[in-house]
Length: 501
Ligand code: FAD
Image (cartoon, rainbow, N blue to C red; front, side, top):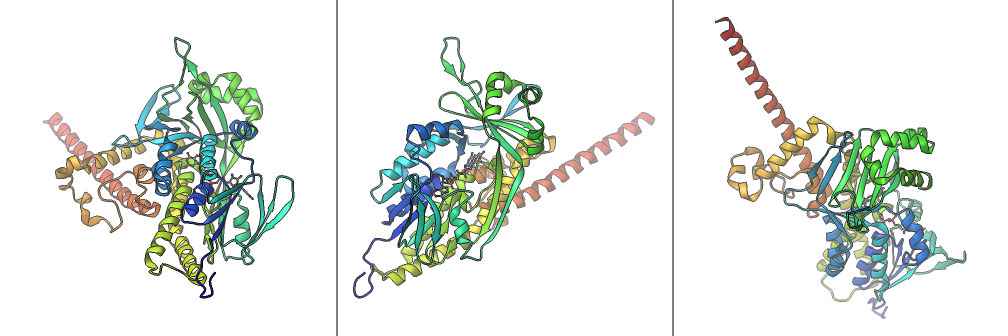
């Protein structure tokens, strides 16, 4: 700092957790000129031993436009490189018990979500952060405590030695669902916090590649779909991997899994519920995965606020763990970084001076972080709740006639509101522009499209838009049903009269 209090030193950020969200946050801060130290409890995922351990438990993820546009906002070319490792999935493939299947496309215009291996994703992000000049990455450095008022953190390194690093200006907690930074923050912030374990757990199973007539590897199922075997209180899903395998995830209530406590009981149960999947997985592989892979629980956390003064923030799962049924946990965490970056940009645009005092910079940080908590809360609450709703939709509703009828109506209205049917849609009062709030997207848009393919629409706006559309489609459904009943009544009375005539 100079004698006039003008800040000349580079500001120091510590980011805790080198998961995807921590890495993207570190890259965003580095681009803004911060000097970043990134601490990760685990070893470097690019090391062979770490890779083998993580691959054993690897699940793949569906990344959608929200996540991709967040990466793009920080670095456009990075998003392009990243997409080369992904497999596009254009819809859900619903597998019925009798072996029949049907495809439900995600989008009228063919937009896709993308399957990516979690281990590849970590490696990819770690490559990006280690290549950045402004970021120093410390693997096998576990953060044990943070003193926000003294601005220091206590770390245990790979030799179990404790060190306390002084003088951070900003601390980002991106250390996942069981965040240490969040626990520390709760000591100084009046934070509302809620956590819930749902009654389902999950087990990962691997579906190997099959072979074609020439002995070449091929996918056992269509690789451009997310496969679902909905069985009401439990379900199996499968996402494709680049090596022609599928990672399957079985979700079932804990009580059900407790009952299936021996390999032969599990095999019989699986044969009864997922006969076609068993054929592709193979009995031996199934038993092997069942006995070796862990049962994992699913947690949902909600909290508010996410920041402390001018110096700390929680992002990603550390701020909002959600059930994985909308495939939005990571997408939303990456979006956190994009939103924070926008707020930084807006604050910079408002400040006219080219040089700032340290006090001014602190004030700016305070404003940005307070706005983040205030504006992000309703979106995070909305997606947390939408993910919970989708939990029922995926394992049960997708098979019910009412759901299918509503979906058909939803798709019809979506189609009518597309530009090519503009003249037709203008005749329908419920698609009229006057019915929309200022920030709502125009036209009829299905919930899945809004959540997944429209990062320009906030999760809270999605929830409000869809609540309104849902009320309308229920009304349309009732009117349609009443008209059908009326017609049936007229026809019956006519038929009765003509019989006695
Ligand atoms: P994490 O990925 O958990 O990373 C946190 C990092 O912090 C870890 O590397 C950890 O080692 C490190 N860390 C923890 N504590 C410390 C400490 N004290 N000191 C230093 N480092 C520490 N999301 C989607 O978008 N699409 C999907 O399809 C999808 N499917 C899912 C399926 C399942 C079964 C589950 C469970 C989740 C799924 N998710 C999905 C959610 C997604 O996995 C998470 O939202 C995402 O990984 C969160 O990223 P993150 O960087 O915030 O946290």
